Amino acid sequence: MNESELIIGIQNGDADSFSRIFDRYKARAVKTAYLITGNQATAEDVAQEAFVKCYLEIRGLKDPERFKTWFYRLLVRTAWRHSKLENRNIPVSDLPEKGDWNREISSEQMYLQQEMSELLYRQIQRLDEKKRTAVMLYYYGELSTKEIAEVMGCLEGTVKSRLYFARKILKNNLERLNVKGEEYYGKAGYESGH
Picture 1: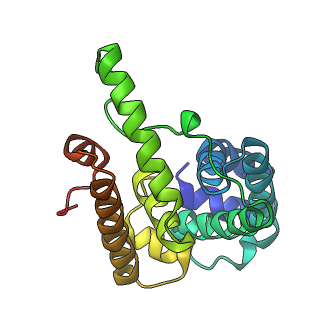
Picture 2 (picture 1 turned 180 degrees about the vertical axis):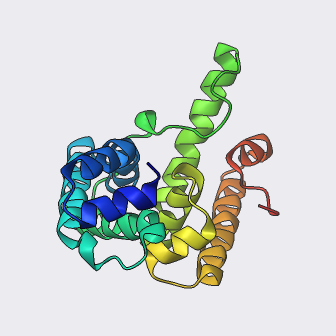
């Protein structure tokens, strides 16, 4: 059964369809909420609240094809609200890196990557909420700029602009700190043509 059929099933009261959507999105929802709120327990609460809202409001979703962005909009707004209440940072050691997970690397390379990841993450946390959310959804949540625009309730050009300026700010801040992160930029997708 494809996702649109599951959504129609949920709208018609089918609990099994909701269970299948929940299983499909739970891990991603918690991860995204964690990246925004910085707290595992809060992330789980945010995801749970988003799924409850989803269940209660899904009948209002006119186009089942748009479920993913509709759900992420619920999730992100709930996470923003919780984040403002708690105002916590994400422990850098828990932040997953995007890249080649199967590649063998030396302990020195692993240490340098961890150091760069921590430094980059601290700089990401200094971005304003909208730029930071766009970066998190694009690079860690792997949503397209079009999907992020729908989630954040803005134009796709606005998302591209936020990503462009976020990359520029991050690059300038790292250069100011005398960090040579060209290799890391390429791995994380921070090259200017991305």
